[in-house]
Image (cartoon, rainbow, N blue to C red; front, side, top):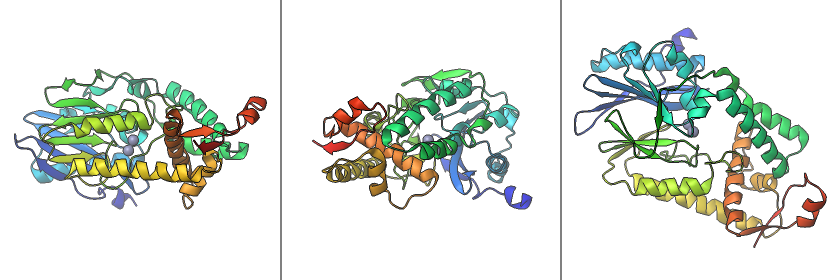
Length: 341
Ligand SMILES: [Zn+2]
Ligand SMILES: [Zn+2]
């Protein structure tokens, strides 16, 4: 077992930019075999780490092994040589390794202002978001036992992260260290940033090669939700000269605009199915069960959160209406039933 943990899932790959900047991709197993990409950028003496893995024993081991394997490319980097750590967004599979890295390097950490509290006041964020999620689940029509089960899934493993002070706060349009232009792309996470370096876009979880990124409702976390997400896609479509997109998971994306178009289509198809389904009134849990009949365990929670985001978008635009207003007035915990307008 220890032998397996010493080798990363796949060796690092290297991308050489037109100006000679090097970006290495280090896949790390963040939960089970679910893999995230950590990146190391080299320009002269400058070395930045983009994202940190999840902080599990496996993830830290893969990170160490991937970093050490940069020597195969002739790099002689130690953790103490790092100039910068950038966290693309406050999801545990991207920032969870920060506690561990803080023991290895004094490199200053940068994160967007809206995700900064996730890293610096983690427990507070966890408590507040848990509250909001619990209320959402009740509104979705989940029964008490189901709410308890979902909440256990949500908080499971998250208490591991401690967090602490953050040196650098990012804003849209900043140029960090003269290297990264910051593009604020909320929706998947309130303070998510994509980073532009020459002809490369580091797209975090905003755009992935195969998967449509996870969304949850803005009513759980302000700055999340489909409205923000689609606006963020517009920002990426407006980027000129992107030749390679390196994402937080999965393989590089060659044609960014084709990929953003297919992600939009995926949301449109899902919303069309919701509108068809809601010709008869449905609560969120019932919609989710129809749209995602085969999902299990944590994916059930993710599916319900996503349906929450899509119905929130349709409801805000009057495309679905609440069909049981009298019941809701009489019973404050009655779940709204949505019907196509
Ligand atoms: Zn994420
Ligand atoms: Zn992720």
